[in-house]
Image (cartoon, rainbow, N blue to C red; front, side):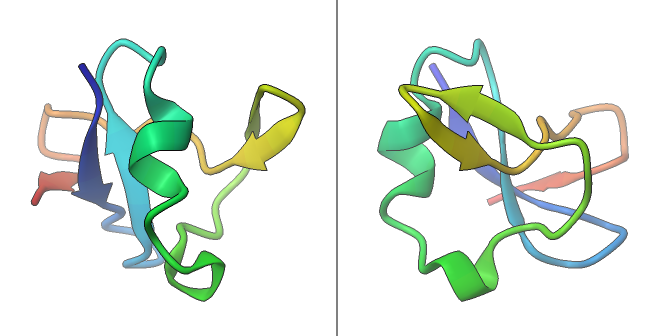
Length: 61
């Protein structure tokens, strides 16, 4: 399952988890609040922020 996370670089919202639920997590977050880092990932024809990390790189909400 995927969850929201905070990017420590740009402080935007990103995601962590398996990758299968990225749209479910990120589509509820306004795009102006998304992580701005690259490279983006593509799911279902849409671009999303890169995956966060639970190893101290991102903070899980």
